Image (cartoon, rainbow, N blue to C red; front, side, top):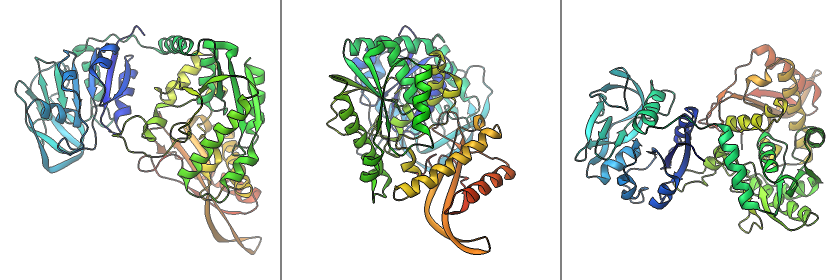
Length: 512
């Protein structure tokens, strides 16, 4: 890919994905590497700059993530953020200690010296801090650039090695002029050109897939969601009819989902499509299972078994396409040993170790909004690209407790009513994701002057940009009242509806 690149080295921060987003939003390509990346791999990528992320560890912890010192001596501009700044300082002989006062939240920064990093910025502005350690003595040759009331060295610079360090997080929205700081690093320090666009990504991936696949057969798990659809279309553009798409009705789908998917792909796209009704085997294996991680792993394993059975009818298949996204990788802890596991995604941690196919994951570096942008470039209709995300394990992770036919029918019908009303009220496109959850909780009610003892449905709707963070959507009370009344009146066995008003974090978007 003949575009300028920035390498982001990950030390486990949950903000790391935001660094990549800010860079890409400025039309510069960013790629993520683990902290044990080699000098050779860095040089192979030929980056214009390197950013070291924050992280939860202390640089003096016994197992604190490190970095090869040689990477810092490549004469490639470096920006260390929070832990990244502390690590650079320690490597070059500075001193890092626990702060007497931890800083979490907004702090006022004072710019002490002019520099390219803070070019055209005011002398004072608010930044977002999130640290309990700080640099108390700079390494030799480093110059202090900024301070806060609690942090003497809020930013510093080594002009000889072209290394910057900041104690705050310019990548988060709360930091005033954070994007300007990142732009200054990209364009003034690293001399990048804003020449990355989705067309570059498509060309790169098509070439990569063609080189990898050659004349082999490929299968794709086509769930009908945005991710698997875009992944399938991208691979199909690369290799044509060597791709065979398999849609499995797991019995965990939304109302009429499988038939709608078959109809849509039959009418809109010319590709090999195989349909398998495996609902019975999924329900049998999920019987009595309550733990959400166990559910996900059972579903992932069963998916592969169903594929293997269907693939025998296709021929000698070498590759499996999956619509894995970057947030899936982050939340599953699959990218870096420094990142906490939030939950296992069926297409990341739920796959068996003895997988018989080599994976093709063309969207692994992308966020959801970037996938939609890619889909537009591939001429996938908006009506399909704007669909809300649907989890790989389907309704199984929207039933808190055992997955059985009765519970599936309850949550499926509630979800259908909720989505139908969102579309009727022209609210569907205004939220990132909306769905219903069935709780393993029954409560007393009064229906038709008689006592009832019914199930509880939770409605969840969120707004987001990329799914990594989200806020709860705020529809008016009349809308919620309408949906609640329909669910209770139309679904036998439900007598209570509640609305989830939790953001992400601290919650995840899905309940399991």
